[in-house]
Length: 158
Ligand code: NI
Image: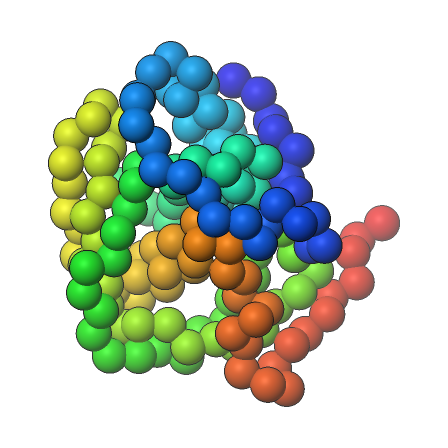
C-alpha cells in the first residue's frame, strides 16, 4: 500500500467527470487500498479516486465506527429524502470549511470490491459523505454549493 498525492484546489482534474469501472482487477484493488490508506493518513471521512488523479468512479468512506472503511464502485444515488445543513470540508481543500445542504437520507446502489451489487440506505454523516463523494465523480465540488457567507479559512499548521 502507498500514500497517494491528493490533488488540491485549482487542479483541473477535480472538475472532470469520472468514468465507470468496467473491470475489477488487481490494479483497481491496489488503487482502493491506496485510497483507504491515504484517507486515513489525512483523517478524511471520504475520498474519491479523482482526488488521487484517477478518473474512475470509485469512492472510499470511513466514519471511524465499527463498520470500517466502505468501498463504493460505480455508486448511484437512487433516492434522497429531506435535507440537512452540515459543516463540510474536503481533503482537496485542506484549509476550507463551509456549510452546505445535503440530503438527510440517501439510498445508493454500488458494486463492492468483490464485484457484488450492493445497496445502502444512509442518513446523517454517511448520507453527507456519499453525496459529497458522488459529487466528486461528477466534477462537482463542495465550495460550489456552500451556503453563502459560511466559508471559513483555517490557517495551515506549520
Ligand atoms: Ni471532497
